[in-house]
Structures are given as C-alpha cells and as structure tokens.
Amino acid sequence: MNNITITKNKSLINAFKKCSGKIFIFLTVLSMLSFVTSCKNSSTRFSDEDQQVLDSTYYIEYIKSDPKLADQLHWVKSFYRVRKFELAWFKKNTIVPQAEKMLEVITKAADEGLDPADYRLADLDKLFKELKASKRDFDKFTEIQKELDVALTGTYFLWASDYYRGLVVPNENKEIEWDVKQNKIRLDGALMTVLGERESQYPYESFSPLHDEYSRLKTSLAEYRKIQASGGWPTVAASPKLKRLQSSNVIPAIRKRLGLPEVEGSVYTDDVFEAVKQFQAVQGLKPDGVLGAETVRIMNIPVNERIRQIILNMERWRWIPRSFEPDYLLVNIPEYKLYVYEEGKEKLSMNVIVGKAINSTPVFSDRMENVVLSPYWNVPFSIIKEELAPKIISNPSYLDRLDMEVVTASGEQINPGSINWNEITEDNWKYNLRRRPGPKNDLGDVKFIFPNSNNIYLHDTPHDELFSQAERGFSHGCVRVEKPIELAEYLLRNSGNWSKSQILETISKREEKQVQLKKSLPVYLVYFTAWTDENGKVHFRDDIYGHDKTLAEHYFN
View 1 (cartoon, rainbow, N blue to C red):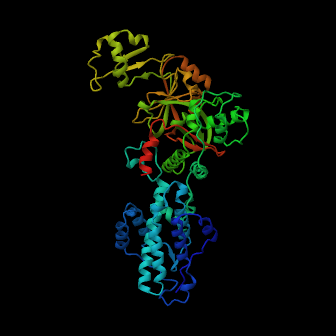
View 2: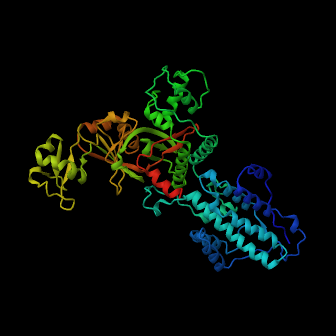
View 3: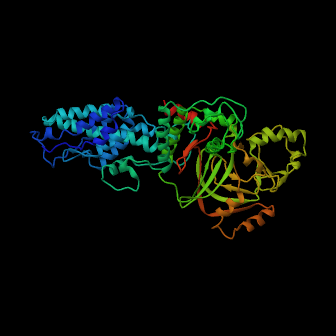
C-alpha cells in the first residue's frame, strides 16, 4: 500500500514539552500521523489512485451524532457536496500535511483566548490510534479513514466558526448589543483554501487572524499571561494625592507596579512621574502625573481581570468584517473617540461625548448620507413628556426662553398655549417641538446624518467645556463631536464648493441647510475596552455600559 505519512515537527514537539495533558494528546496524535515505516510492506489492498467517496448519509449521521459538531452540519454538507463527496484529508491514501498544522493550531487555541478542550483532540487521538491499528485490515482501515476524514472536517469547522466568526454570535443572542455589520465567511471556502484547493486574499491557509488589531491583542495576551504566571503585580495602598517630588511609603509599590527598577527611598521622582503619566495616558485618564484615587484604582485592577478583558475584545474583532471599506468613520464608545480613515489610514481624530449609562449610545453601523448646517433640534418625545411638559404647564412662556417652537408636519407654527400638555401621549402627539438654529441649539452648528432605526447621529454642541473631561458620557445617546467644522469640511470636500469659509458663512445665516455627500460613508459605532496600539502599548477603558460583563457571562460559560 502507499504509506500514510506526515512529517513530525521536532521543534513543535519541543515547544510543547512543558504543557499539560492536552498537549500530550496532541503529540500522541502526531505520532499516529508518522507511522510511515510500519506500513511500508503492508498487504492492505490500496493503490495510489484509490480515493474514497463518502456516502452523504454517512457524514450526516456522523456529524449529527456529536453534539459539538451538530451546528456545523451546514458547512460539512456544503464542503463535501462541492468536492463530490471525495475524502478531503487524504491524497493517494496519505494524510495531508494540513492535518498536522490544524492539530497544532487547535492545541494552541488558548493563545487565542479559546479552550483546546472544545475541539475534540481526544476524539481525534482515538481515531488515529484505530487507523494505525487497522493498517493490515483493508475494510476496517477504509472505514476508519472515512470517519477520520469527516471528523477532521467537522473539527475544522468547529474551530474556524469560533476563530473567524466568534464563539458568541451577537445576532443569535439578544443580550449582546452589537448591531455592527458582521463578519460573513464561507467556512467551506476557507477549508478549501487550507487544503490548497483554491486561492484566497485572506490568510485562511495559514490559520491566521483577519485583523492586525486582533494579532496585537493576541501578543498582549501572551505578555499578560507571563505577568500572571509570575504572580501578577503588587497592590498599591490608598494614600493622599501625590505630586512630583513628594514622599510616600507607597512609592516602592508604584515603582514595582510600573516596572521601574528598585531604589532606596520613597520620593516621587521624575522617572516615576513620567511612568505614571504614560500609564494614565493608556488608561484614558488625564496624563497629569498626579497620583490620585482613580489612578490607584486602575493600577489595582488584577491581571486576571485584564486578561479576560483582552480576550473579550479579541472576540469582538472576530465579529468585525474581514476588511473595512477603504474610507470609513469609526467611533469607539468607551474611548470617547472618533476616527476618520481614508484609504485605510487615519485622516482625522477627535474627542466625542457619548450617551450616559441610562441613555447608552447603541453599537451599530450604517452609512452617512448628509451633513446639516444650522440644524433645528427636533426634541424626542420622551424629553418632551418627561422634561419639558411639566415646565411648560407651570410657565407657558418657557419655550420662548429656550428659543423653541411647536410646528406641524408642514412647518406651520402652533401656539403652545393651545395644547393640553397634561394629556399628550406618543400616540396623540401630532406636532414637532424643535429648537431654532443658533447659539442655544443643543446640536450646535452641524449635524451629521446616517439614517438608522436608533435615531442616532453625530452633532456639534454648545458645551465645548465637556470635551476636556476624561469621562464623557453626558448625552441622551447621540454622539457630540469636538471638531464639527473640521469634520464637515472633510466630509464635504467632494460635494461641491464647501470650503471652511463657505461652511461658516452658511452657518451664520441661521437657516437650516442640508448637503448630501457625493458618496455615502460607512459609519461604525463600536465598543472596544482594550486594544494594543502599533507601538505595542495596551490601552484599557472602563466598561461604561456593562457590555463586557454581559459578554463575559456568555463567553466564559
């Protein structure tokens, strides 16, 4: 017979010598893959041209019989149907080298924040042993060969589904708030790429991630696990607020926490001061070097918790489409930051204000279509009913003080005194209460529209002072931008004669003007509480809406 072979990777074996029993199973599987010489003179009745064909009922029953694989039946069916039910992992009755690569990847699943035990290593080990034991029994050998092929295929889809699409699928779980356009991958096509049966622009054949941001977080995960293995970092005791050159007995712990060399004394020296500022910057705090309660609180978040946070944000990158469009706008809600990308490179960035926890900004994506200069603010009914109506009842001229008006759908002005404000409901409210363009307008001078069911948009604000605060959750859900004129000028650069001076001149007229973008722009409102920048610095932000907590309940259970 032709030999069933795969080359044993000695360096790989050495890399796993220190690992647990899961790795032992992996090594055992590899040894099963390399029984080349023992089969050399076997009398099993095979020729190099023999290639088994599966019966469709066989693989369906096999996949359905394993609860772990049952959800992958769609992909298994599609994959074998395209290949006319021929075995995939054997060529001329020799197992292909991609099997070893897949086993290696699965064994290292913990590096991805996944659990290797979820991917059937023990079952595969058993099948490889049975295959080796049956090498002289033609009928039994072909039966096990068939089973192993389906098992490897099902296991690949099980792993690839978690790795490329997410362990937790947002659109299948209402508790996970994530309505961003999601990663759609044909896993059957990905496996064909792995097996060298088709080409792809995506790195499926190397079992690699689809985003650089994911890869950087993965590197950080390994680094933080090393910190965890060495005992974590020290707890810093509470103390009065410290400034540069002051003394405190917490300074030695601060030095150790920030990775500075030990020195005698307890003075808040310049090197500690600079390290604290760097720490504050990557934590989203004001980098003033003042060692206050909030800085100490964040320093004392355990490394175990940071590891979980990194893993959860790696999971979110699995949900992101394989590639963004070349031009797009992204708001990272917990970071309070907006970015504009052109040809994949950052073009603009600015601070933003997002919804407070009770009025959280939703996580979703859409396309920006219009910029509105000198906009009216159309007051949501919830604000009319809960905040404005009681004040109008007690003071009929209250709306005049706010520069507000009530109009019909056609824009005809209505006397507020003609309305029974005690009786209004969302069903019988037939007017529009709006604030006129001008300095009192809550939307400021510019509004950026991307039509969506959440009624969320970007806008200017008359309260510029709020952008200097570290935590900026103040809005009713919409996103206030720090540099609205700069953003408008950029977005309208291809939509006619809209220079900065033209935009400001139009705004000065205090008449609403809507301008359509020449080409709509993808907008992503996302929620990342951990990321690693291009310099390898890990940034963390607080879980301001509790989305990490909710995801963790599903991911780690």
